[in-house]
Length: 531
Image (cartoon, one colour):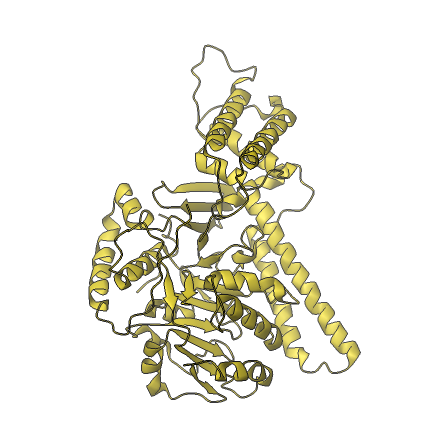
């Protein structure tokens, strides 16, 4: 099955939990419906596409596709939500260079090169770390690691400011809104830009004036910047809105536009919206319950830790290979819960936290990891696993099909223990937590889609996979792993958050919140622990 990355764009409700079924009697019907969906999807019209892919989404989910045209230096953002027409935003990556800014914007190629350099230097420190024994060398080692952590943080800031600018809100989740205020803001912005375009001396009063509607979703994205956006963000928005007239063949003389006045007007409109909403008791910067963002990065940005951009870092967020994969997982949840009468219910997959299989330190050289987790895992009721040994491959199909969660704490993703082909053939694949070095990294395939070991779990049916984009140190990732499992609730207690939320909550607990904290990402959809 080919994963299609490039063509991927096309009130408080209590989620309905359910656990994996003990038998797979429902699988046949699910797979038959899936085969039919794949046979028909290439022939879908626009309205059929929306019905097939958009309207089946839970209302709390937002899907964002991120695609880069490397030849023309353009970024394409696609935002898809239930019962809304998808919006596509084209953002020239070099547009910021023509504006007055107080930093040097970063190009796509420079961003990728910088990330590769940071990761390469980090890998070198990991290799050299075992030789650091004296206090002075240890201090120097940490100094280098902290420097790389700050460089990665700065790189992500530049990507967000240079590439996304004022439209970083397109990637964010959903917030409480003031409907009347939103409608007013939409009208004010449209009228403001219209007046600026046609107030120029070369526009005759007799000439037909074409009005270009600034999409409501773009206004929402602008409001997600908060009540006090930066001057650069305001400037970026105004230039973008004016350019929408230019793209429709309407002449706009930028030299005659009073940008200072426009910036003041737009800032006042944004501030007024938030102030009026707050006066009514609406917190416009509070996310709605069960809010979740699903990213679809294309083959040019899959290596970037997009989840750690400021706009997404505290957000429940995961990534998927393509939109069809998301459709598959939603049909999967519905096949597992046929008793649901209300199709608008928030559906969620809940795992049984007593059905866990773990592989801990199979190579025998990660003693810190073993000491950290072995006592905890041993006292968890129902858990089974292997410590300092590699289970026989003949057992794997039964092991994975009989557990709800598979956890691996060793080198890489465990390729030497279980073959990818075995995972792909599973009738039922568990949630996978793979905390080894570069366990979630994908390899470029040129004109084809990136590929990696974790794809076997996704193709095998795993609803979610946690894995690292690059190499990490054992002590640091062990702390993040424990924080993540505690927040998720798999170690007991009242775990009320999803797995993507738990990963997001654990990032800043690391001493290196970016070099280590940004490495783990979630492939798939939200999964919860059954209480």
